[in-house]
Length: 379
Image (tube, rainbow, N blue to C red):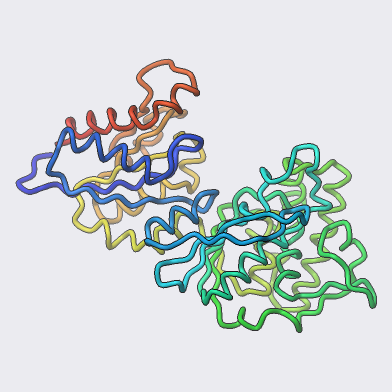
């Protein structure tokens, strides 16, 4: 590529899990580019696909802030967690993993029948109190299968067994007979919600939240059947209370059924994670007139072509007619698979057979070196 002007290069990498954040990865690539092309116009845009770390990525990209609150974990133990707030304080970035993440519960205590999303509701409530009225909810990494009942309870919805109010955990909700929404936080009506959702699973059934995701959260075969029946009951009551289709809709089974509560009671719009993030970042306008986009993540594999960050960046690049190159710690599929998808080139940053531990420790150095080589080839 021969240019008569200073090249504009976009760096839009996801995090390299366990090694580098999105910003750290972009910074490493930037250092390599500058060695090869000191005058390049480099624009770093940290990106993510809605999984863990997305809130922090959006905060960095928007020059916003992270806020710490005291909330409840999945087993209703008090803990500290975070949510992000945009620079103008109008948009909150909520990660369900911050308050309901599987890693928050010790392996021997993991029990979806006793776990709740109450902490997610507390995150939303805290953001409402700070004035946020636009919400981006990132659904990855939850330990719960409560259909979002816990988060609704934290926001003022009440669950009853006959005349008695009950706790919004699956075990207690077994006797649920009705839902009272009169106490739902009135500020919800002033707010808009967008949820990053990359799976199409329905709320219940063989492809639903309990059967597909329950076992990895600690549910036994008996638990799975119980949870599936509970989600069916919740779905029916949610539909009755809000006149919103839930049981026939895709995506409701993500994160243990949280989208069902978000859609029915908060009017949430469900979107592919990377699309939501790129839209918030005004990615299309920021890459205008660029000569090259470099993206990447820890591993380029079949999931990368199923809606992860590199594919979202690729689609934006193709739409704008900008070549896209991907870098990764490892490339698990034949490189031609990615070239056929539209990438200009894909590179593994590993210099040869090295251990995962060494790859993680040297990620910044290896990214930088590979980027330098790429720029020497391209320009």
